[in-house]
Image (cartoon, rainbow, N blue to C red; front, side, top):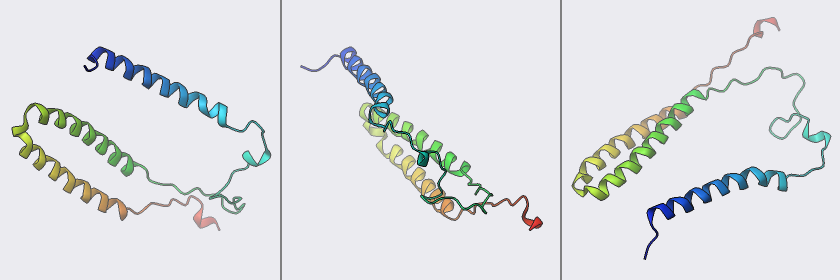
Length: 128
C-alpha cells in the first residue's frame, strides 16, 4: 500500500515550506547576540586591510554564470530524459549519445575556464 500522489505532494510541499521557515529562523536562534567592534571592521582574507590598497580586484563572474546556467539546464534535461527513459527504454542509445556530446562540451568549457585571464583595470595607474 503506497501513498497516493496527492498525499505525497502534500507531504512534499509541507516539508519544503517547513525547511524554508527553519532556514529563515535558525540564524536568529544560533547567531551570537553580543555586538562587537570587530564585526564592523572590514577584513581582507582574514587580515586587516592595508591602507595603501584602495583598488578592488575586478573579478569576471560572467563566464562562471554562463557555465552555471548551462549546468542547471542540463540538470533539467537529465531529469526529463530519465522520465522519458522509464516510458520509452528504446530511446536509451540516443539519449546516451546526446549526454556524451554534452559531456565533451562541458569538458571543453571547463578547460577554457581554467585559463581565463582576469582583466585588471587601473584607473589611476599613470598618476603614481
